[in-house]
Image (tube, rainbow over all chains, first blue to last red):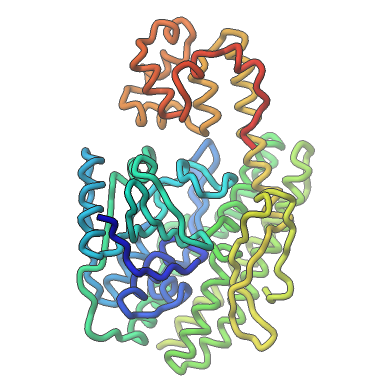
Length: 336
Length: 142
């Protein structure tokens, strides 16, 4: 049997938003990527110097993987079924086949490193990538990977391998699908919840690593890099911030442009014109992040020499933190 | 960012096969999705990350050729792994994998273990053992 589901693939910037957006559209609810991102409170900031990957501190412009997904399910009242198969890759593949025969497009977590169709410069050991499998022909699975322009294919063995990638966030065959859609969706209410949480998380988490405080903390760290690290390492640490910021999936400037697009859409849905104004401000903040990246680009190009640009970069970050603080306070007030 | 300002600096990083979606403002102030072939700044930081990896790979290759480390060390670096990750893929303790990085222990490994390693690195057991061939390879992790 060769099941194939009539699944419409659309490219997105970010995999988690993209998979949710594509799955919901299959069930007749057409929400854009920025809308999913905003409702799921996808915008965030954290800088964790003690948490290192390959010896480089982790900076992130979004919450942990999977969180946008669960918030969307909660806020739009969508019932998702989820399963993990810790020990049995074969069973994980059998269950997937059963779903496909029933005509259920199935989302799953995979590791990126062994994804054969993925662009090579992006193939690191990142394990929280989302795809939808929507068909099978003999030994080949039909894949809708929201990062890609077109649909892709994976052989049985390849798919099993990426579903059982090892390391941080190992997917362990995790898969999910829509069990039941709600009868109605209260979009303005979901938007309100999404915005409220984003503001709260950016402004009030009482740990200096997160939100606006996290940006200030990182500024301090960046200022110190040339004093406590050798030039090469200092450049590598700073470069990593920009890699996280401009990584695939961010839609540019650490998700700030995507959030601006969300606010504009939210203004149209709710009729709150203030949100449209604020969307332009968020765009300006995104532009500031790109300016920070440009300074970093110069540091990276001169990486074997001592460089005075670190102060310049740190100052820029402090300015961004001020702007974001003011922005999220205004945003909070605009939806009261 | 405005749609018309989207950078298109390819630099052949993606071999022309890839475009990043970016959310931008069009001339009427509405958001659209634009596609960027690349951005000079982003190319620089990505190149930096790959240079860093390639340096480690080259350094490890030298040590393997000199007989200080086993070929497993080379393929581990080439696959951007560390001992912890490789141990998880193998289902072994870290110290066991560390032991296998030494040529002395590597040479005594049973064929089955060799094949298991080779499978993780997507090569054959023969390729894994062939240090002579390693000497001739150029760095192709680009």
